Amino acid sequence: MTYFPNFNPKQISSKAVQTAQDLIKFYDLHGMPGKPVDLTKLLDKFELREMELPKTTWGFTLDVGYKIVIVINQALSPELKRYVAMHEVGHVGLWHPNQLHSCVVGKAEYDHLENEATMVAAYLLVPAEAVAEPFTLVRLGELAECYSVPSELILMRRGLYLSTGV
Ligand SMILES: [Zn+2]
Image (tube, rainbow, N blue to C red; front, top):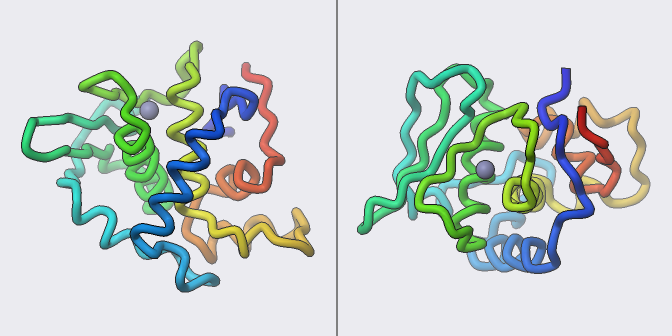
């Protein structure tokens, strides 16, 4: 099973990558390569809630004026929860124009905003060191475990995830 059937790397703007790099720098996210990225400082800026949601709804973001609430489907694995949280941070960081981002998996139309938010998550959660040379797909599972991310994110970060959709 693939979690990201409609991801299209061609739709990623340089703005998305730059925003991710700015967040990494500002929150010093990649100071400890070889371990899961510590998201505490970044997530302090948000209110994180886990809730029972429909299976296909992984999470959403609510701007309630004085704070931004990120809601995550409580049934997801720890790796997917980390991913969803950073995907939502991606939407917020890129000033995507909806007040409510409902992020549903397996949607037929995976628009460029979703792609960008996913790419921001890949950059935030996977340090450059993780995909540096010598890179081999044999280590994919090991890297995913080491950084506590879905393995697709490692591939996206490396520029190898080229899903054409279903
Ligand atoms: Zn989304």
